[in-house]
Amino acid sequence: MNAIKKSPDARIFKERLSIELQWIQRFIFGALSNLPRYTKLFVILLILAFAGALFASDKGYRPPLEILKQDGYLALCDSSSYFVFAQDGTFSSFPVGVSGRILRGTWKSKGENPVVVTATAKMGWVNGMQPQDEYRRLVFAIYGGHSEPFADGERYGMFFEPPSKPPLVSRYSNPPKIDPTVVTIKNVYRGYFLVEEFTKISKPE
Image (cartoon, rainbow, N blue to C red; front, side):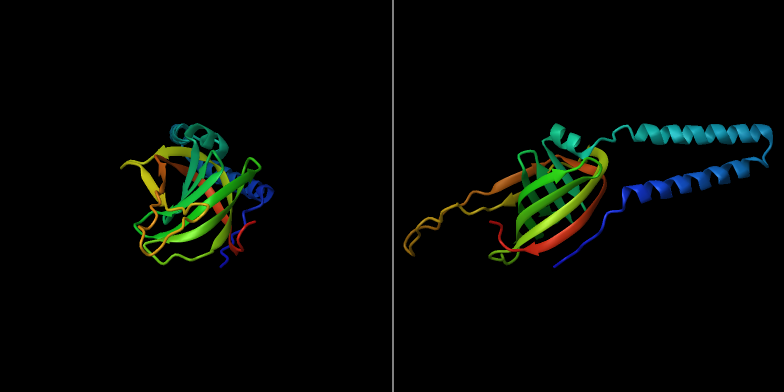
C-alpha cells in the first residue's frame, strides 16, 4: 500500500507567494486610490492593525526540532492518527478514536525547514486482528509551527510488545504477562506537514 504525496519545491513556493503578495498589494492600493483621503487613512490603519494581530498570533512559531527538544517529543495529528517522535529516537502512532492502526519503531531526521523525518515501524491494530510481520516506512516533511496543549486532557497509546525471547509456555502453565508500553502526550503540534511516503516494507534487519 502506497500513499505518496510530494512536498512542494521551496523555491517555487517562494516565487508563487511573492507573485501573490504583489498582486494583493496592487489590488489594495488600486482600490484605495479612489477613496477620500481620511477614508483611505482609516483603511490603512485598519489593515495595519489586522497585520499586527496576525503577527502577534504567530509569535509561537518555532522549528519542529526545537519543539521536540523542549517537550521531549513531537506529536503530529492528521485527525485520524497521532504520530509521536520521541527524543530517544522511538516512533509511535496510535488512533485518535478507540480503534485503528498502531505503529511502533524508530525514526531519524535530516534538514531544518522542512525537517524530513523517516520512520520504520511494525504495524498492528487496536481492536482488530494483528498481522504477524507487517512493517511500514513513513516519510514526513514537517515545517515550523507551535506546540499546543490539549484542552480536554492528555492522550495516550498502549503498545503490547512481546519480549525479545518468548518464554517457554506449556498448556498447563499460565500465559506470560506482557506489560504494555504507554506513550503519553500532553501537547500536539500545530503547523504544516506532509506524509510523503507510507510504504509496506520487509522486516528491517
